Image 1 (cartoon, rainbow, N blue to C red):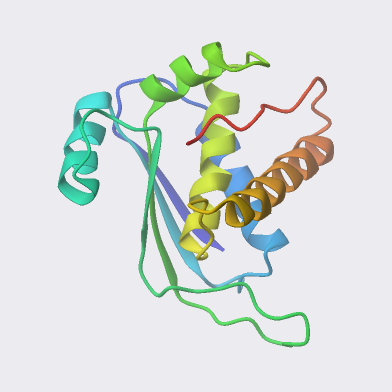
Image 2: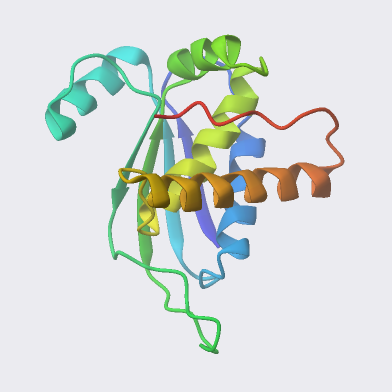
Length: 165
């Protein structure tokens, strides 16, 4: 799996954890190991510009996903998953820090960025949360991936509760 993490935010973030959880999520979703993903970490001003330009919404947001080849997880009976360019995930640590602090189970900015990375991966794979049933599926999968990764890493304590909207 080719995953690039570029931190352009000026904020120190755990880039290795972002890389690791992205790789774990893609493996868990059975995405071809030769597929490519880019994760970009930006400041609030850059995120606000993207949010306005692409969503026509004011202010910075936590995560945005920009799919390329529109890859989807393979069906259970498929032997070989398709490969390609997944796209870009853009993260904003300033928003992540605020969300983590305001969450019912308060957690760190880095834990929130890990959750947002999985959220972004799922969006790249076609998952959405506009409808209640879609939200239940996506957030359930998101929690399972984050919990599985945390267990594999031997991390203790409660997993961050979903704070993305």
